[in-house]
Image (cartoon, rainbow, N blue to C red; front, side, top):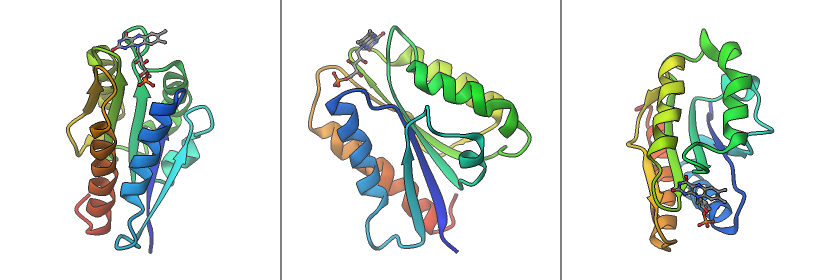
Length: 154
Ligand SMILES: Cc1cc2nc3c(=O)[nH]c(=O)nc-3n(C[C@H](O)[C@H](O)[C@H](O)COP(=O)(O)O)c2cc1C
């Protein structure tokens, strides 16, 4: 049975769109045919989407020291419907930050600690001036999550 990787990422710029595409490309390598990766913008993702997922990748820019409003809205809507049912859900996080990223990381880690989701990768903080290497890191993240799911490691 195919395992489901849900990518919930807010992409308000060309660079954040490219990061999301790189995550998907990493997760969609043909060798990992036991995994289905799907991206949803946070404003479209529902609790049912999370309940159907075997793992989640969260992605957001840092705005004013915090996650995007869209990702916060996602958490506000899914928190209680998921709270009793998704404990232990493997997740990973990436943040595109102009210069910092710590406020966003802290806020998201606080929420997912409440949900009792399980971090299976260190947070990926892509900060500072844009670098093409960020795309490689995003692709590696997607690949690592999909490979771990495919191998039954998470
Ligand atoms: C209103 C606004 C607030 C921002 N606040 C922060 C911030 O608090 N910390 C930070 O590191 N970057 C901040 N940034 C920069 C964004 O994180 C960055 O522009 C965004 O991730 C998009 O990246 P890109 O320019 O490579 O597409 C802010 C950008 C905007 C437009």
